[in-house]
Length: 361
Image 1: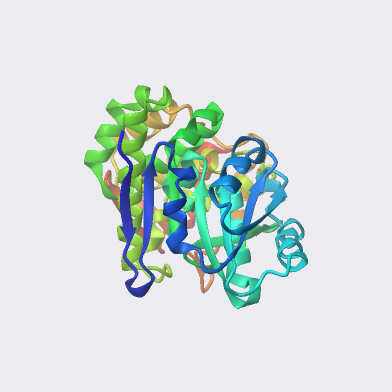
Image 2 (image 1 turned 90 degrees about the horizontal axis):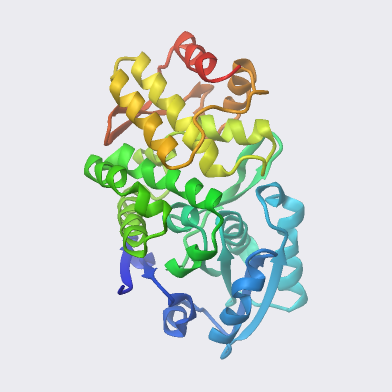
């Protein structure tokens, strides 16, 4: 299987997305994007034993240091994030240093936000090792941290210099995390590409079995869609928000259950089922469409109901603390049809509560 390269078109800040097997040890993919001599690898306790030594060897012509963070969404906090700055300052890293995020979405978000802030902005490279990170969080420049009151409420837009998505790293990914990544892959079909959705439906068994060709196609098409949307709306002033299908519901589930209890993709899967139900209530989707979305989530090994301890009222309270709430008005990404999403700021409270009551205790 040959490696492929896509591009995020941002004018003078264009950057490549490299996708393929065995590519994270190709030094030539990094070299053009490393600003100076100093490189700080940011990773976590799970990924470090698997890949850190090989990445250090790959970058051995540079002054390479590393910071190893605890693993898990519950550590995506200001306190843990500050360890990156401790490492950078203790090693006297200058403004021409480069951070390399080696890990999943949490590592990428924290390293990217640190790169956005250190000395008012330094270069960074994404090396995502989970399916979710490869198809979503590593592309587009969203970085940030969680607050007890809301997910990703502290952050910045800061684009990477390159994304190096090695499909071989998915071989060590736990099955639960593979399924969580498929929730984001399915999202692209739901919002933008019904033909891709048909392909995913017919190849779900191969994806779950980690067929290399099937995974490579799913990653490539997902990144194509995201790169196109990001190029049109980098700072989410318009339709980039469509990428948040299921996320307002999902972020409420993550916060309410306790960060790390549910994986992000699991919460998004339930949130997408809720968004589908609400889309039906306002007359956009058919009952058959809603059943199909539910079936796809089940086939991918994903949940379709939120934790039993979260009441409709509690979910609504948590949804009100969301970045997509503007002027006190909740903006929800819903589906006009399979393959076409839209932002709706005029959902009736009764319809929203009916959806939440259907899915929550």
